Image 1: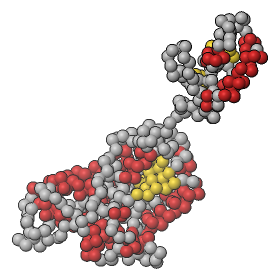
Image 2: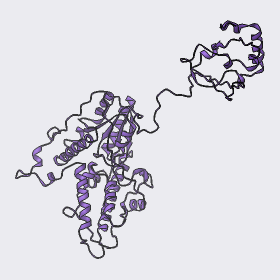
Image 3: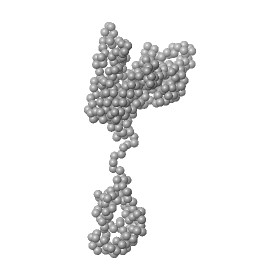
Image 4: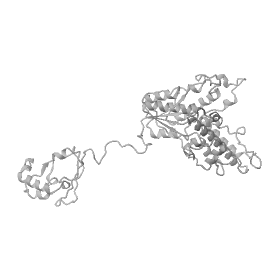
Length: 462
């Protein structure tokens, strides 16, 4: 018999096929189960793939050996074939077809990684707005942005509202503090460059600068640490409002205190207004672990061609450079305190070694304990205030050099042991005071009241 497919149109064969199909339900369809791409499928297939054994017995030895692929299968992306028996004399087939030809068991499309730290991350581009967190160690804001984004744009703004004269006639930011800040920003840029990134520096209002940069690079989110004073909280509200209009998410973090604000055993509005009450509430509270600094950062966004900009001088900020010089023309004592994360880490290391090496000079009852270091003080407060040093990192480093456990909530009078560990506990006592002032400032600056009683006290122990 000719192998022409027209031989399959015999009326008797059709009648037998119809009877067989009526007896066999859709689940018993004669099509088999295996993945075959139609692009590589030949125009004809052996008839035993489509005809049950009963039908085969009706054909003579000259029956056609090939038949056309049914038109129903031609609309499918894959044809499945599988045999449950290796013996050619006993053919058993199971027909399975997907209702949707796009539902293929082999996905060819790109798969989004579950881990944001993988090569393809969730966000296309993000902005990290540095404020009083001028460091790369223990920086949750920076680490999270780097892990959740394909590219990161670190930014620092010198806000003109922080300079000039206050309503009382004093400098809002004096030349010494401004010099220390400029040095800290410069050091941050170097640390970011060492990790494959950079720092964009602008003079301008953050709510204007950040919106402009977000449009330029197509940013999906802005990452920043929250602050505590009234003006800083107002700036955060302006940023959120401006970014909401642009459809850009703003994500805030907390990283300026020893204890995390979310771990406090009370709501901030219910915080005790006196230090003793605060200390009793946080006694025994666990301090969160320090976040490791990044070894390598995601690159800067290529879109927008954003220039990093120059770090301003005192003159650019409207300050007099002569004010930083002593009367004899030599730099003042304050000028020897260089700003920046690297300087802060060196001073902390030196201070911890001095605490451990120097003998105790207090009274026998332990009531005259002092902190040893440069001029009997650690003098690390400026670096803590700028965020060049994390209080949690400081706590961890002091614990490493202590012979016994250092507690952040230890009492001022620590039994009069006179050990260097007692001096470190004293420092933890001072860090706890710092936490109290920052939390109480946040309490009143966030409240819907006209004044913030503790704001003026914050800078002293910041």
